[in-house]
Length: 310
Length: 310
Image (cartoon, rainbow over all chains, first blue to last red; front, side, top):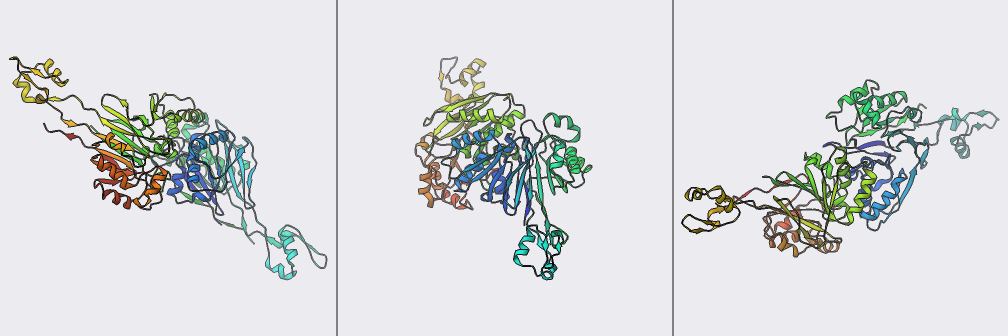
């Protein structure tokens, strides 16, 4: 089962000749979740041959243009393509009126429903759960209400260790009960604990998206042990003061969050256009958290299935 | 003096993996005129290393998203870059409220003035004249009010034929009068006509932008003898009915307008994403008007100075 992030845009507010502004797409079990939707997002999706029609859920971190201005173009394109299925948009509530106004202005006869889900600022809570994937909001610290997202695979039902199926001649009813967490009572009245009889074939995977935000240790507990952490890194360490003033982070701060939250891997982006190269940003992060990559538009980060021990 | 068009986007409403939606930029004597401003225009400007700050005038043909959705991003970028100079936007009047609403929503503390010039639908008139360049509106036929633009160099003052300067010992006052159109009265009372004494070193150049429009012979007189004609060519000849229904043209129709208006060169664009290749569109136009090119994003079309005979 795929669990993979594609970087559609990695600049901060000012795009450059090689970087579009913010948007990621997560493919989780062939469900595509679009995260932020800056100007040009639909174009990047085309260029990367990602099927627009497979996106049904869009998550907007905050209402700055460099994270939202691609929405109307994408909605307009969906309408021209004959979309019928609902489009779910998760964003801070002020976006809803703006969307309505612009859809009325730019889109003729919308053929599908936009289902708006208002994010609650400063709230860490489950905002989506389809049984396979669960998504939580992550309160961030920025000049305007800003929300990150953590996408987690849900743990499925466990497997029964084969040797015990024969040993105890388990019936279908008993197997079902075990999968749902019951202990086993054998014919002779012996109780065998569930954990002895069952195992999980893999560990659930997770991806956290944290942008835009200044350094915030409150994140650490919420994203603990994440497999892949994206944390904005607008500035170099020398510009830490500027980062704070503008509600952003340095790459060293992003790396500190990765280190303190025991992330497995860190990717950084949202780079200020003031830096001709991002190698210093990457280097400053690596000094704190070695497993860091400064992303480029078009990069794909797969999170491999993590097999559990049987 | 440069007079050159760069194609920023050449798709119709649906962008493709290689084509952004509509935007051109005309460099006329180092004044940059942006014509239409679809989503991604500011990104294309960056990719083509065109200085954003040199654009002071934007011309919007009509209020469909694939010609306008890049405006707010561009305005926002200008503000972040610290722009102070006025930005002139020529568009149909309904855009003004939409701009105001979105600028209020997405842009903090606009540092410069947006000067809105309302285009009058169905009116062929001069909308800009700075002494060097003159721009006229061209009424188009589309589902909504749509306006093309013709950009013309103004003819400067003529030169005096050198041999006559000596022959008649022309004074500065006489030269100035001749340059401004007077005839010459010689010392012995002979009148020599202005045309005999003066010449223009070059012919004024022109560029017409006609998109979106269905086939309209009304254009012919307005763009007569244009050096470079851009005419939309959304469809192949076989889809002529569809072109009419949707307010668009086939490439054969674009070529017919070029032929009938005695254009020197034709460039076509705004191609429907239904065609994998545009070679048939180009071929069908060439059969009618040989000097046709189907544009690609990034193409630059220079209009060379046309030397007059002395």
